[in-house]
Structures are given as C-alpha cells and as structure tokens.
Image (cartoon, rainbow, N blue to C red; front, side, top):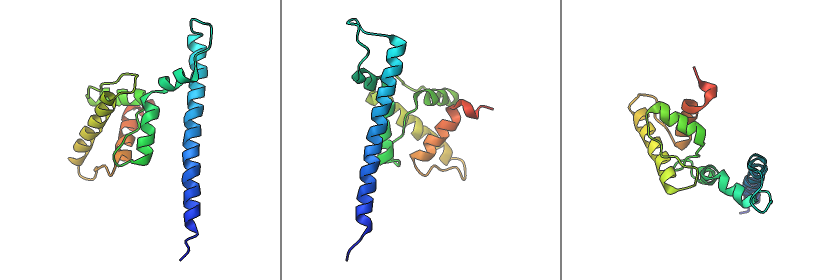
Amino acid sequence: MKNPSWPKAFAFIGFTIFGLALAYYSTAIATAGVTAKILGTDRSGDWLSTGSAVLMVGIAAAAVFGFLARPDRHLFLKPMVTRRAAHAYGFDFAYEARPSWRVYQSLLTFAAIIRRDLERKPGFQARDMIDLQSFIWVQGSPEYEA
C-alpha cells in the first residue's frame, strides 16, 4: 500500500532542519556584526570572526535544538528572562555566559521546582516543558510586569 504522505513528511523535516540551520547561521552572523561593532577589532585589526560570534550566542542557541526535538524533556534558555524569573521566584540560578552542563542543570532544577510547586495547585499541572517555559517567560519578561 502506497502512502503518498511520507515524501511530504520527509520534505517537511528536511526543510525544517535547513530552516533551523539557516536561522542559527544568520543569528551567528548578525551577532558577529553587532559584536564587532560594539567591541571593535582584535589586535591584528581584523573584525571579530563568525566563530567568536557562535561562541557568544552561547548556551541559548545550543539549548534550542534539544527543546525543539524533545519539548517534554528539554528547555530553551533565554538568559535575561530566566535570570529575572529565578530572582523573582527566589531560586539561585547558576548562570554564566559560557555553555556548560552546570548552567543547563540549574535550568532543569529550576523547572523541576516550578513543576513541583504547580502540581500542588489544583488545575495548574504542567503537561511538558513548554508549559514550564511559558511560566518562566511570563514570570521574567518585562512585558508582563504589573
């Protein structure tokens, strides 16, 4: 039995992966341009490299792929929002700009605490990490300030 939807599904997956790679690359290039404009040039007079920009994008860019692949297990780190949310929640978020397991583990711990606290309230159970990400966003984003 032929299933004509399989080629469409594979094409969709391919275009999605291509789009994500393109988005990551363009983010790195844009970051390189902004960073070079702010920081200027290195000792040899060259503009900062794209490789430097990729490092500066940091853990936020690295975490997005896990979040997109498994939103039931992974979170997307937005550093400023998460730091503000953790501070407001009374959680000591161990953030540093370099990607590290310590930072991501701290993020997962923060999410586990939020999940635990929400489960104690009837009707507020988180279905997956997307719900927890939304909670963190509303808690830490300036657009939701009272």
